[in-house]
Length: 175
Image 1 (tube, helix red, strand yellow):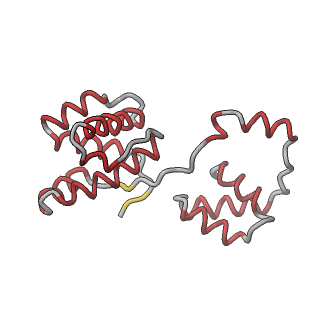
Image 2 (cartoon, rainbow, N blue to C red; image 1 turned 90 degrees about the horizontal axis):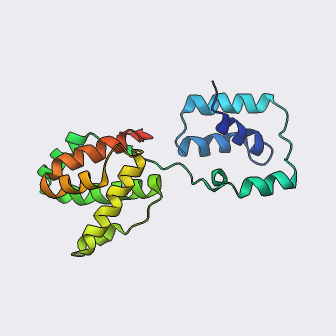
Image 3 (cartoon, one colour; image 1 turned 90 degrees about the vertical axis):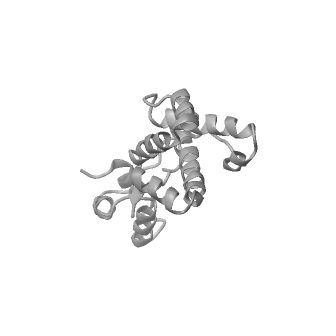
């Protein structure tokens, strides 16, 4: 079954842009090749979409669904691979992982914090709390902010495994 959102995108934009450009944009946004081809085929067979009345547009613009952000790109990483890389690189990969996952958490949870704040004493505790709050929001409450915070302080590798496992559930691509 075709992705309805992707099919609607093609229907609305097929007269404005070449279909190949729409396909490329969709694939680079994280949609699979098969979904893109199917949506393009359905859109090319259908009649143009009529614009809704202005009142409906105004009503829709004020709803939360209208304020959606583009899908975040989350990379699937092996939790144990992350730990091994952190050990092999003497902690350098820990910084790389922190900045990459911080960006993913901010995009998925819409909780804003400064990733660079991790280097500022005392303030870094606030940054970690916001980061873990984002993980809790992403997991829909299944992962506790306080639990992650305590694990990070006491047994950081366990916290890293839990965080990466939670992010992997939302992964849009992997290597």
